Length: 223
Ligand code: CTP
Ligand code: CA
Image (cartoon, rainbow, N blue to C red):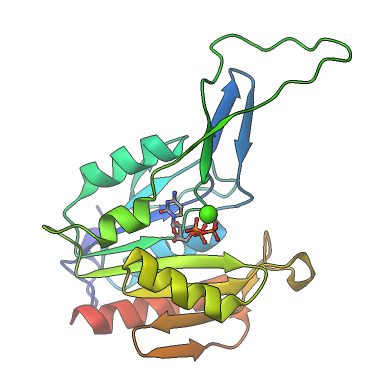
């Protein structure tokens, strides 16, 4: 409520941010997930609110606290995240920072799978919906600006550029998440922002600074 009153270039604009990992159950006590602290998505939501935006924050089970002042919707699975995102629309802009699991376990068990010596379980997977692609390709009510992320370990720019076109989003924030970069789980990020006709290489900076700069660019794009 307080943040809705902040005067800034994003005042009156509603921005959706997805953040954190999703957890896909194997059984009631086990899951598969992506590695994500939710730090970058949370920092982006906070930066957008500092510029006056109203933020709806759809988050999987993250390890950092959700941003104060946002409308927070907590989900666990990719399917739940898609439904929460669809419910939050329409918005002026959307930033998809979540590390969504690409697959869920097909036929997850309602009861705990018991360990049996020498007998290994086999998991079968089903494909999860691509939330970013769905929203980017909406024929009606698409946000004016859709921003995706691409965490890569190889051919970062080429993969991110292809991803932007394939999914149909406006910008992709690409980063190199090889363990030796220290970016996953750390305080800093080094990103390249891929747009329709540019790839802007930003210097390594704090996740807060990346977020402030991204929020400023979003404000400029919506103005
Ligand atoms: N994303 C999403 N829903 C999914 C998978 C990804 O919304 N089911 C979004 C992420 O939030 C991110 C972007 O899509 O903004 C890119 O995610 P990424 O995992 O890098 O892309 P994929 O197409 O899944 O490709 P891959 O994992 O094979 O690199
Ligand atoms: Ca993926």
